[in-house]
Amino acid sequence: MPANLLLLPVFLMVLLTMVVWYRMLTVRVAALKTARIHPEKLKSQAARSLLPNEAHIPAENFANQFEVPVLFYALMGFLYITDSANYYFLAAALCYVALRIVHSTIALTYNRVMHRFSSYIASCIVLWGMWIAFGISLYTR
Image 1 (tube, rainbow, N blue to C red):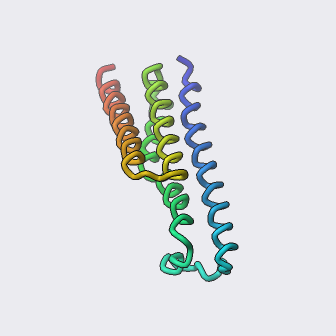
Image 2 (tube, rainbow, N blue to C red):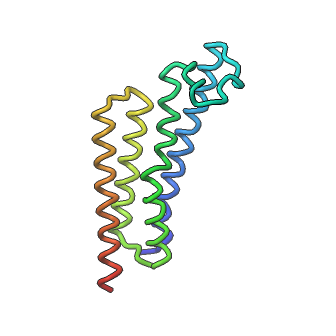
């Protein structure tokens, strides 16, 4: 398998992060305008309570893109540099990204906690499986 194929899920995750960032930006700007709040009033975390709860959800989802997904990015890099790329890892990585897209879509639309949580757990299970498979592959070469 060409190792470059492994970069496709990475670019898809970056694209997801860009979409969430754009949603965060548009929702926050709209909330500031609607509430007639000057951006300088939001200097501290505590002052952000001036914004409605709906304006915080995209920001929380954006922050979430830099939590567990960091382990995904690291694994993709390790798979690439150790020339461990194969179709199992490509399929699992695409599955992980799909679950992250589902997670973000739920968070940014109807935001049902158990639905969002289920996609989060499923994505983590896929990622942990990938890490275990990578670890095994390193020591069984």
